[in-house]
Length: 151
Image (tube, rainbow, N blue to C red):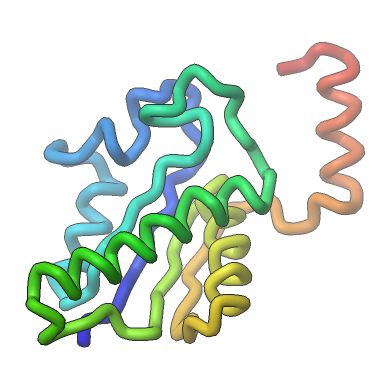
């Protein structure tokens, strides 16, 4: 069995910095995923809605379900690929390490919740610099900024 991990990227203005666009570079998020993978984890770095192939859509900034639906299909596909490539001799463990910073920290919390609901054991969640209390003052502040056209 191999364990899964995810690195969730921080906020980026340019969609060219989405994980699918940065693979093969020395971008810090790519290097972080390589570090996790070199320790035996299957690394998954999702593009969120509005990044990568979905760049034509609005970014789903701080929409919990959007982060969950960007990751869960990748997790399920990783299970299928591992089973297929190993002739069912190995499988993706029912454990995951979830990491992220900034927007990715919020995404990590959302993804951890989804994985827990699916019965996956979240063995570690390493997050930082994220807006966690959006139901209170931060949400009101963001609403005022939008209302006053402060982007």
